[in-house]
Image (cartoon, rainbow, N blue to C red; front, side, top):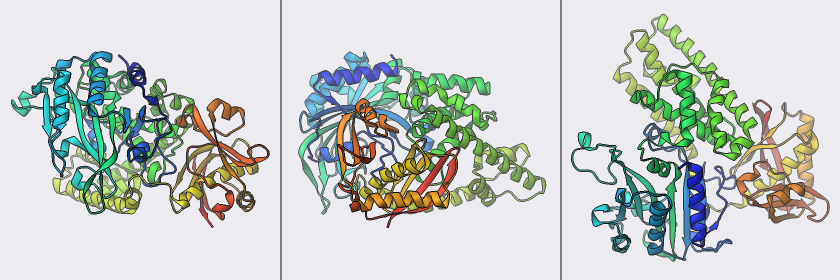
Length: 602
């Protein structure tokens, strides 16, 4: 069973159970400056889990693409990804434990045909002021799960909140005990390495978690207590890729259909067979994973850069290029796009925006190819001159040219030079200082968790509509949005144009924006189908990320002359006069045919 069929079966199953399908969030939420990427399906639902009413009702379902980049090293194993798809269903104060556990068991065993005897479940064992979940234990037994397949774990394993355990939750955070489902692989013999004792949460690879039912019922108060939410909720998440691996009865998730095409291309490019060498397998997985994440980010308009989303994307592309080098292939920037093209079959948004994806993937890969050559020249010159290649030198090479430590060590090895453990530790020390500096610089972005859009970000978000329309009037209708990002300090807007604006063009754009602010135009939202929005002339770049039912924001007379009409899902002011004024502060060319503008309120 392929991943497309699993998606279809899941949505159909929960729709038959009375759930309404909702549109998944985009990977980058422009209106939320507190987090880089959407990392779970519940992000958009946090207000409704706390009691706010959802327009679609109390029983919801979707499939949410997500990105988690906290520890990219985990991608090297056979079950973790930086990008993944999460099957999700929610009860917002409707059904609870009995129905949810029954639903998920029926879906896995009946709809997907997973053998019940190969499934194990975990239950919350108590902790953090919350009692042991004996109710779920009894429900699982009534469903037919034997006691030997039910395991209790503490809050480290069977409690879910975005912040961790109950003790780690900050005031306002919501969470609850959970119950996970694991699939057992008979082909994995844990005994040789881990001894006789093994259990579902063992790290030996014999068990794979394929679903998690969170009973979201608690909120942390200012005085540190956990109180019951006004309603008892269910928040389920099941990784599509892992479920597909369980259906294949294969512990290596990179064998599923979504990865098989690119794995074969890497084999052909490098002349190395996947699963022939455990160290080389790591590089195969990193390339396949990072390119999938990269093309999905590019398809939403994220452009490689030196900060925030752009930096994360740049790191992914360059890391995949580096692992091609580790496999002995000096792959070119153009060839890497050919590798990634296989993902067009699985992601319609990637296919639709392939020209943008290919152009920027190729451009960034080519830049890194040149950086590697510069780094290699510096290193070989220093070696030939007999200079000491220590940890500080290696880090400087990494920081200035993006030249990875592993490649430095490989070159030194080829020249008979041993890079000692002490020097490697020195590099790691410098690298940790660099990471700590980066964490401190961006700490404010994450400290608030899920935040409501502020007054400032709402003004700036509306200003991007004015900027977009003004650019099209001044430069021409070829201008189209390629990405945007908003913080409380500024807006950033990427658009298609061959060259940077002249001073005169910049003044005209800024003047037109402020004229429309001074006119205090009405901002009117209208709900309609995407097809209808397009017919009415609404700009709709990346509109598919909002689904078939969209909101169109009209700036001006909604029934007469308007200045801007655009599909959007973010927050907006009611009248342009509320913005006050906009000042364009900077522009730069960030890629072939792509210009970036920064602007502030003022």
